[in-house]
Amino acid sequence: RPHAELVIHYAMDIREHDGATSPEKITVRLGPDSKLTFAPGAWIHNWNSIGHAMKLTVILDGGKLDITGISPEDRDKIDIIELPPDRMSALVLNGDPVIDAIRFDLSLREAGTLTMRAYDDLGRLVIDRSSSTVEGENHMEIHAADLAHGAYVLSIEQGDERRTARFIKL
Image (tube, rainbow, N blue to C red; front, side, top):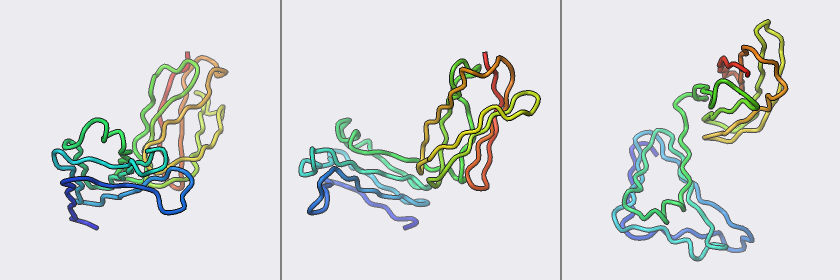
């Protein structure tokens, strides 16, 4: 809900529903101007979850999360997914020049299928792959050891969104 704020002053008790046989997670989406704050001394209680493994997933969709009031141990019980303002974040390669693999992180507002294509300097398609993605941050890697040395363009698409980046293969 927009402009909502929740402050946890004591404990947040998270556990699976009755009859669950494997660890689950609870998900909270913080929309525009919404805020979830853990006050100093607050804590997350997952002792009654299966294997004490249940986590809180917080999706930041324009909202804010303040976890400064909880311990590092309790911060590990939270998975944070930050959504980009657009459907797809900018494409930034991790490591250029490329030696054996093209690596990049990409944030998406929706899960789906990502198409990844690389073109050589003559415009020939040299890589054509697709991969399933999740909402939020995705860490992608494309095998590129077999590419010849030279300049390339990577194009990624999901739905009607497209991003490109140039890279050099050594």
